[in-house]
Amino acid sequence: MQRDGERLEGKVAIVTGAGSRGEVMGIGQATAILFARQGASVLVVDKDEQNADRTLSQIEEEGGRGSRFVADVTHSGACRRMVEAAVSRYGGLHILFNNAGITDRKTVVDVAEASWDRVVEVNLKGTMLSCKFAIPTMIRSGGGSIVNISSIDGMRTGWRPNVPYAAAKGGVMAMTQNMAVHHGRDNIRVNSIAPGQLWGSFVGPIPATSRDLRRRANPVGTEGTVWDVAWAGVFLASEEARWISGVVLPVDGGAVAATPLSMFHHLQEG
Image (cartoon, rainbow, N blue to C red; front, side):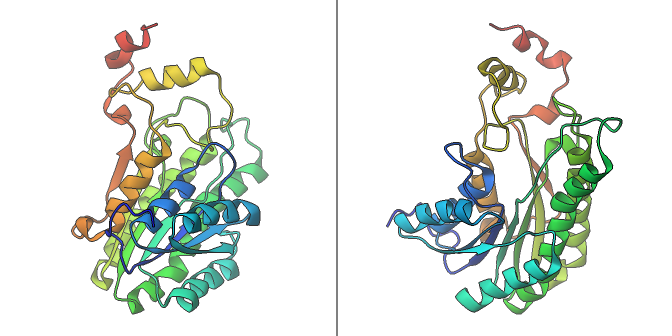
């Protein structure tokens, strides 16, 4: 069995948006794989059955423990059944990794009302509903860790217009801090990871020149990957982070620490 360690040994985890979209890996897929490698039993949740199965196949090929659950997290019934599935299959719930999300690259002037509603529904409402049904079960399981995926676009304006996404992710950050306070005495830690302009399936096809520009725009000067976010997820889900709650952790190569002028000379490279 391929194992990286035992940091999540004996834990039961739900990862939403964990399906594989193809050759380029996504955050949910990488996280589900790493959770399993660290000893967790993983419920691989995605609204697309085939995508979920591809992620699950990799977990099983490596000897990990997991199963697939098809759900649209914008529906309360689906989120309730998702949590029930984790309990019935593995006996409890200790980790919830909320990754399911979509975007619409529009300004506030250009965005259609229906698209705004859908982006907020998936990113913000979906996270809320997953937590709504997971938290009581996590309490009965003795507590645990919730990790919500937000974005540095919820802190700073992104490199493309995406107002609906940015607003929803800003809401995820606010909800994260509220839940950390409300459920700390329940032995539940709640944190958020804010990925930067890394490379993953959610980026979509972009020219090599654009990828290079994104790389040069962060202080570290290297291109981030979904594994960088997944490893941060492992840490926040583990007992190593037992006294960390209510934080928003940028995984962005230092991008939010920089200003355009501070990176000017690097942007002139090449």
